[in-house]
Length: 302
Image 1 (cartoon, rainbow, N blue to C red):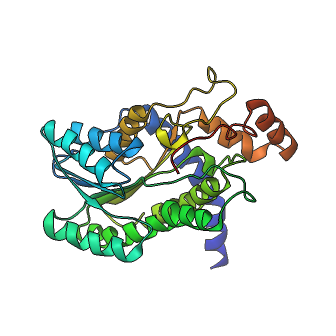
Image 2 (image 1 turned 90 degrees about the vertical axis):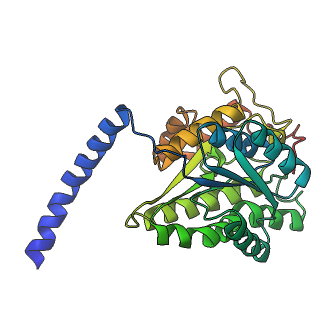
């Protein structure tokens, strides 16, 4: 038994090296994309911002049906009508993902009226843009309930049927701030870090579940109403992402079964640097980039 364990320990670094090289080579090859013509896609926070563009992009790339969830009926209705006019089937349901009972109730309604959801996109999020001491307690709780716990309820509502069918996909629109937080958005950064841990754990938990996979998208600052007024010191070096580009890249990642997507790709360097740089150096980078003051002019939608 000891000999067998010793052999496994010796083989482990070789296996790791093989898988790293294999993954690197596969990333250079064009990946095949799955067909969306039989997929029923549900997007939380689908009435505006990135969610609206995601809905349009899934419809554009051939999704069978697109379902929108959100709290503001006016925005949901406008988005659904726009997509329907383009020739795709789209409907909406008013649902607050922070409300567990409401999520389970509306999930049942969706199954009865539309059918089984095969692609779930957890996109709904809020940000209050304040420091800890300036934040209202209820606002802090609201951010965690929507940005983090909402994913628990929606995933629990739709994942069991995906596992039964051995067909499905859970996607999450996260943020690079989950890995590199900034001052002035402590509620958002904390919730996104929790959300990332949730998706990492879920992705690993589904490794041996055939036909069901996950995608986590970590974009840099995106030019939407939610972060209106956020100021970056060097916009030429770090331009805000366009929401339609984030949507397009996300749908492509889902179709390619890509587990994690950093936008732009240069965010990989940020993650690598943070893994070995001393705290003093990281603080200097924050000062240089202006992240200490970037939320001072925040006027976004909370």
